[in-house]
Length: 223
Image: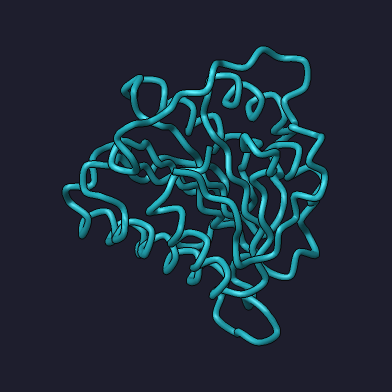
């Protein structure tokens, strides 16, 4: 199953830049089991700036919207799919270790308990995501969703992002909010590239756009 077109703002204009650099990529793994055989790691930005309003049309804090969309993502994933939640403020930490979603209510309660916390430890969060996925089943399709309203404050993420991609872990980077603090060129470079050349970086200024995207992702696999 392939996902092609999104309802949000597509910021993958530079189709030629995969962001991989001079590294060897693992061969693509085709998943015959569908979304039920996926490892899903969601990284949620809980930095201080996520207290700000989502947009000029939506006064709800961005973190509240991030929690709502993550709750929706969990609720729509098949119970046998695996899920992990990592928050990144200062520091990043694993809130839910990678596990099957047979206790969705517990996972949703953990999401709702997240609160604002300092700076933006994105590099640390990506490092933790790699550790979570290292012991996963080889026949599972592994993917990471990084939702943020800005850029990491704990150093360059390029090395760890390239390592994840070289290990055949698909990286989705999602800018959320006005975008004033988002370096879109860097985000595109960090993200994976689909087989049809689509860079898996999106920027959404409205909650409805983010919700549609993550809802689709909970039901499909992008190759």
